[in-house]
Image (cartoon, rainbow over all chains, first blue to last red; front, side, top):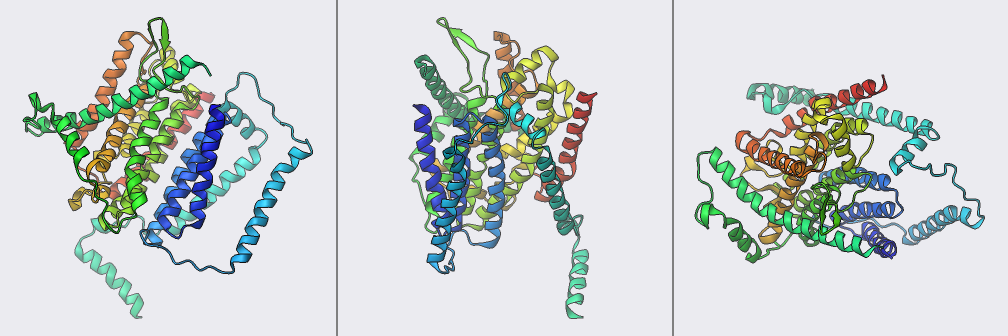
Length: 191
Length: 327
C-alpha cells in the first residue's frame, strides 16, 4: 500500500512540476520547478529498490540545476517575466504530441511482444550498488570510458577557454597596475 | 507491513524532529556564550539564570513577529525557500545512526530511521539540497545584496561538493560499503579510519564548513557589506527557519564526521554511545571556536583553496588509496 501511495503522490508531483517548468514565463519558477521535479524523480528509484541510482539522481541534478541557476542569474532578471517569442503554436503542439506518442510506443513495444528478459539476472548476496558496479565495469565498460574521455575533453576545453588570466587577481593589484591594464586595453581599442 | 515497525518509525521521526529543533535553538545559546567567553564578554545574562531562557525569549519573538512579504519579491519562491533549508536538514537525518541499538522493555530499538545501503551518499546529497534555500531566497528577494549572496551560495556549493565527494570516496573504497552502520562496524575491527585516512579526514572536515556555510566560508551572508545576504528581506519565523536548518545541519554533520572517521559508537556499549555524543559535542564546539578565532576568507581565496589545493589533494589521496588496496 505504501508503494502505491508513494508512487501516485510522486507521479502527481513530478508531472505538476514539469508542467510548470514548460508553461511558466518566469525564469525562477521554471528553474525551481525543474529542480523539484528532478529530485522527485529519485523517489521512483527508491520505490523500485534502486537506492544507489536514486541517491545519484539527487546529487547529480542538484549540482546540475544549481549551475543552471547561475546562468539564469546572469542572463535574466529572474524576478520578472520573460517575454517569450511564440512561433506557430500548432506545429509545436503537434510535434511534441507526436514525439511523446513515439517514445511511449518505443518503450512499451517489448512489453507487448513479450520479448523482455533480463540480460544480467540478480546475483544472490550482491547489493544494489555492487550490481550497478558489476554491470558498469563489464558489459558497459566501453561506453563508460568513452563518456569519461568526452568529459575530460570538455574539461580541458573549458580550462583553455576560461583560464587565460587565471592568475591575475584585481584585488591583489595596486592602483597603478590596474591603471596600466586599463591603458593597455584602451590602446587596443583606439589603434 | 509490520505494525510495530511502523509505530517505531513514526516515534523515531517525531523524536528526532523534536530533539533537533530544540537543539537548534539551544545551539544558538551555546554559540553566543562560547563566542562571548572567547571575546571576554558575558553573552546573554539577563533572561533567566545565566541567560538560559534567552532561547525561549528568542522563540517568542520569532513566532510572534509579523511575517512580512515585501512587494516586488517572487512570493511563492520567497515563501518556500526557508522551508527547503529546514526540511532537507531533517530529511538528511533519516540515514544517520545517532546511537547504538538498545533494548527498551524487551523491544530492540535501532536509533536510525532507515538503514539504507547508501546512507552516506543519501546524507550528503540531501544535505546539499539544503543550499537551495539560501539560493532561492536570495534570487527571489529582488534585492541586489541578496542576489550577490545567492551567487556566492551557488559558487561555494558547486565547488565544495566536489571536495566532499572525493574526500569521502577514499574511506568508502576501504570500507566497501556506503552504509554508515557498515562504516561503524568496519572501524571496530580495523581501527579508526582517521589513522589510515588522515588526509581525507581533514579535507572532509574543511568541506563540512563550506557545506554548512560556517565561518571561514561564511560567504552566503555578506558580512563585509554589513548586510545579511539572503536573509535581508526575511522576518519572523521564515528567517528563523533558515537558522534552524543551519544549526540542525551543523549537528548532523557533527554526527557524520565521527561516524565516518572516528569510530562512531564503537561496539555499541553505553560507553560507546556516550563517546559518540562526546565526539559530536567536540565537532560542534569546533564550529563555534573557528567562528570566534578566524576571519572570513575572500571569495577568490575560497575558490583558490578549493580548486588548486583541496581538490588535487583529494584526487591524489583517492589514487594512492587505490594503489595501496590493489597491491
